[in-house]
Length: 565
Image (cartoon, rainbow, N blue to C red):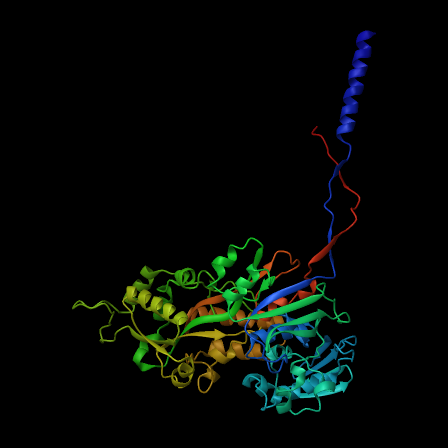
């Protein structure tokens, strides 16, 4: 009996232990952080104040940054370059791509409480057409061809003379209030008091300027509580102006600001040492590229695609990025911005391979002369000698010298010529009198890639096809993509164009620039993707917050633990 009792007790104990081991275990739960309204954010802007008016700020990044928060537009673009609605509630496009019907948000208000209407949009379009305002020529010319009509208070229509898929790019202009500026002529608007006390419909409204003596040193904005979308959490947004990046960083180190609008390469190492400064980086559609004049008889070898390929293979672009750009650039493999909806990652990527490049040049009949010399020639006596023009300035000087050194290793001579940037376009690119040109193609403010102006046959004469690339296949892709409204079909056409470009290499793409933005770790909710213009860093500004609450702890999560059989 004693042994039976012992066996029963042991069995019961084992069962108890087994049951206990299978009891739910309570795991600790971290309380959820809930953004709360309030707080003041201050940012150092590199530059100075001019006018707070979206039709007058095209040449002033500092004004654009402030205006991005004050003024709304019909559309914005996400970090892939796809359009997203801002003031637009809905949009319909006719099948022929020539008519755009737009409905505005009915709850959109100006900061003075008046409703935003179709008449405000039409009024702003009329200003963009004006030759009396400093509006970029391409924008003014486009709007001069488009008919705009208000159908009712919140509905308007644009009528284009022909289909033009990149038209959505032109709907990102800041809207101005007709009820405040409608009685002014374009010339009067340039110096209107409105530019000092702007009324917009964006997430923040103008509060006051910061002034020292007679100098405007900053501008303070406050959250607009009646903003039609999600109101911002940050209560006050203050910008302070600084002449350069070094003084902006010093202001952050002194506790005067919580952010730096652009961390340039000269201050980047020091900025990275700041323990509380978070760095957000994004590619910018600023493409450094070497145009090749394919129709210049003095460099007839440019007409051979294999030689163009060898010239690119012989360039140590990774070293240019690390040593000449402090690592703040990314390799370019074509003329369409990486990360955009139109970019095709499957294109051929040409790596640095000087030995393979030399083999290509030899196969093309170019050898080092037996009589001596360092420049390759062919049997006809033609030499691989190139005149490379570039904009005067230290930035381009270093890259141009690196190109010359790399090509010299191949037996290719590059004679460098620095010229004034304006003269480079007027005296070399426009008349097509150059041989090779190192330039930057600036595609900021243009989320739609639209490579047509630089690479279509129709732009060889009088346009921007500076390489004079006469390729019917590539041109067909570009021309069809310009009138095609279906996004997936446009992407297919641009993919085909990129494959063709990578195969033919009518120009030699080098790298894209990286933009760095510094913001204190106390600011939460900040995200940044590709940057089509510096003010795009504010794309999700309404989600930024400084103050947070801890939510009530939810019931602990129960996790069943099981034992192995």
